[in-house]
Length: 152
Image (cartoon, rainbow, N blue to C red):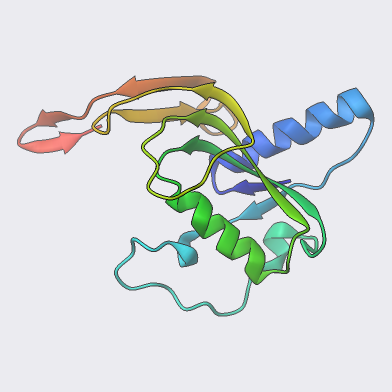
């Protein structure tokens, strides 16, 4: 299991915990920070030394469950796949997302989805998890203008 930083990490740990409870199998959970792989940053960060300690295991020839909280355009997942391949060639990559809100810009589809949540492009989907936010919830909101600036 590889969780996309930051909420994908906690969802991945929950999945690993459930597998341990149900099947008695320990599955390692790695952390993938995709910041250097994003294509929407004007000055991309240099692809220097990889933080192997974040994943902590070889992805080469492994079946990887890539986990993220919200899937929209697919660009985050494309960046995550680039990050995985830089660390080795996985046997397979399956995508697990908590929320699929549509609006794809790339041909990426999840293998496992918690909830398909059709939204407009202007809406914002926020996933909150106990580990980070003290509560488990998914919120849908529209940005509002406060003092001439958009806030979410």
